Image 1 (cartoon, rainbow, N blue to C red):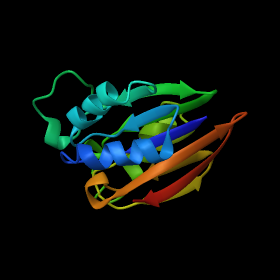
Image 2: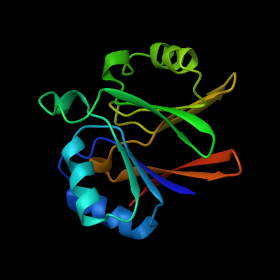
Image 3: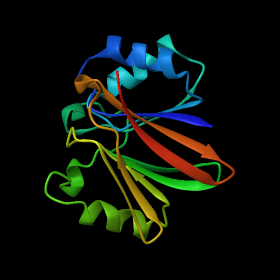
Length: 152
């Protein structure tokens, strides 16, 4: 399974479409800022499953939650923008939240900085910012997974 991981698009729908067409993912995960971009992408490119949360720039968008937990091929994933956990300062709170919920993976954005770290059975991943032409790919096969940082 190929998963496109995006965050912080800040109204760069044209860049999102180019990334989507290049990667042709099975699933799209959008970690907020601007959640409407992820929603619009789902209308333009409807052949994928979408998971979307809102970020701090989506304060008036009540259609999406601040965080969600879901499973992909047996892997439990926490998706949050990250601002609620003060990820610009450290990753302790968001890592603890992921552990508390029994997650294998925590995906977040907000910092506009690509990040990947695994420790004690939990992996933290930030794809960077689409507005900065950055994104991530998660490949899952038989319960094993690999993250990649990319740019366009």
